[in-house]
Length: 189
Image 1 (cartoon, rainbow, N blue to C red):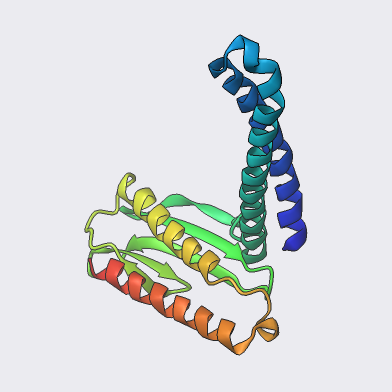
Image 2: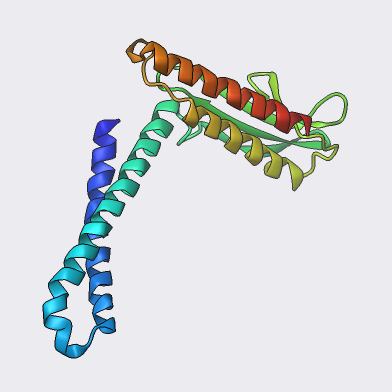
């Protein structure tokens, strides 16, 4: 993870320096012409340093997010699409966790009682409480369930179980419980 963070962070650093320097040059328009030569190094230097810090932070976070998505297998789902099953539409997304090789299937379809429901590996995770399963509603609600579940996976991401301290294990467990509660709230609405 650190390698990906550093890679993206350096890219963000370089872009931040360039944008900061350009902003520094733009700041010179607000200074009198007679004072520009003395003010130029400070304006460009300070804005370039600020831009570099901000750029590195943004790049580092992007690298971390990319690493987590790659590790979870959600950056490139093996199957992602919508199809018609009889009278109603079905949304399906499949991906494979690269850490343990486990296959996941997220399916959004109309259940036996006529309500649109999202299932993860045949377990109900979200009851959308919508009777319609047409070409417009299924993609919308499948994407909603997929985004929420992927967000939950990213937030509770753990690289290796044995590398966690007891405090980190407890905080991760609390995050998982919090997201399960939020999923229950969303499915009951």
